[in-house]
Length: 185
Ligand code: HEM
Ligand code: HEM
Image 1 (cartoon, rainbow, N blue to C red):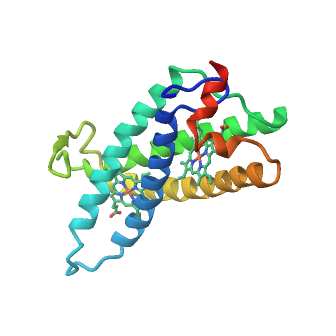
Image 2: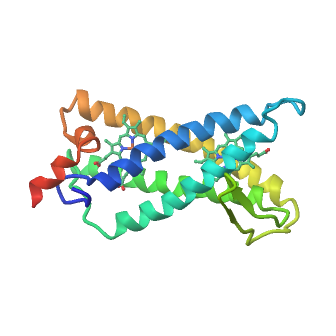
């Protein structure tokens, strides 16, 4: 039930998928809102601190998610060969974009050489810093990659709903319930 099988996702993958989706959408909204804040707002420092802290937790969870995904079987794709290939490429693009957004966020925040405090619990050190215009260039990449990630996630959501309501596939149900993983055992 924890692990994936060829017929379904285990609980770890399901939890990481939905917590990840929630965090990504939340971080996008928070990022957008906080960059428009007035210097005199009480949230001026607090909101970016929360954004960075949640972002780093998501970065660590995403590295774990990718390792977990690579160590296990993948549920068989439903639908035609074309749909299976398109879904695979779409998922790869989602992972790649997510990494670009997360790493560029890290590079903005560590551009001057200081580490990132995660809710005051621990600090992630700066590793690559001091490049000319690092914060600005990483900021531009962060914004555009986050925007493309949201657009692709919207297409991904529509595809999931289409498979569920129109094609009557089990794709969405098995991303919500790990008992489908048991059918293989
Ligand atoms: C999927 C995860 C993330 C999403 C969707 C996201 C989204 C955003 C968005 C939409 C903005 C506003 C950009 C703008 O208006 O120019 C922003 C700003 C920012 N983000 Fe993220 N972010 C994520 C992860 C991170 C991480 C991991 C960090 C660093 C640890 C980070 C640090 C920042 C910083 C410092 C800003 C302010 C940039 C500026 O003032 O130009 N973000 N983010
Ligand atoms: C920011 C939002 C989201 C992101 C970044 C995201 C990302 C992903 C990724 C990367 C996969 C592939 C998993 C793998 O192969 O390891 C996946 C699978 C899946 N996602 Fe999402 N997702 C998001 C939101 C949603 C939403 C809102 C829905 C449904 C309404 C959804 C439904 C699914 C389903 C059903 C699968 C399983 C596909 C299959 O079994 O072939 N996702 N998602």
